[in-house]
Image (cartoon, rainbow, N blue to C red; front, side, top):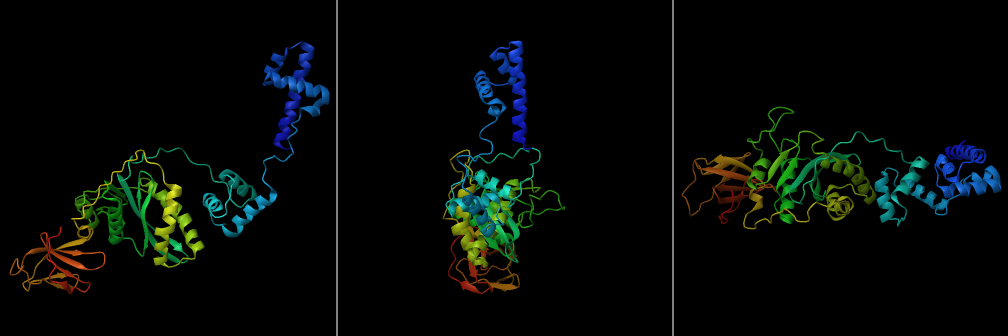
Length: 395
């Protein structure tokens, strides 16, 4: 016997007992209704039905009948077939987005989820664990950004690293791109493009990867005085870096990557993309705008904390690898098995024994600086590109 039928039978037995007690003991209608736990009008209605129809009058006439607003069987079958044939590896939320966006579905998320679970196509989620208090979000966009990378099989049988720079206040992904391997250059790129488009931000939250921090002891605290190339660049930009000491500490970005790892490979597969260049174009033009629209939260304050970048300063000469060198007697500098010849200029006869800095840029070219003065630009092979460009630049 079903639960609803059992409850109906219990209600019938309880009503008959109180109904007979009212007749025998002279209970008032109010007293009988109170004993039964219903309103007086409900007890009177049940009494009339019992007197005219007997025990059958107490049963709910709606039981066993289809609801007036129930979906047609063919619509339910159509949705189940759609999920099973095209989106079987999608979770319910991802499938529901496609159902509404691409297939003009009108049913609610709960309706779709319940039918998928009843059919056995989707398993019910496990009960959530104990409540934990989330770290409050930054109140304004631009106050704190997260940057992290995820090594994952984004396309079949190929692993790439996905670099994501996102805002803590609203979950907005400002930049995402694939690279063969995460490192200093990918981190520089992730910061540079954000600064160029939005401006300088206040702080950056990262893991303790070796390109972000020097960590003297495994699992220990980072050395904030011994900076990596990336750390040095952030200090020059006056951006405060914040290290995370556990996956739970950077839970916001961890949850973001979990969603990306679930959705992005399926979207790339639907689009038939297996090439990194095409995947990056798809990310920028299609996936990230739609992803932000779906998952962005509203920040506490509408104002933004970004500060416009000054075009008078060359961002490339900050977001680069800088190495100090001493000029040799032949007026050359050695850098990574390359010999950089300092060209003749009007400021000094030579730079022998002078302290200079080599700037290695993202494209592999090099710049040689004495203080703020650019002495020369060199290609990837260390050959001088031009001996005329001696304008001042930031070191």
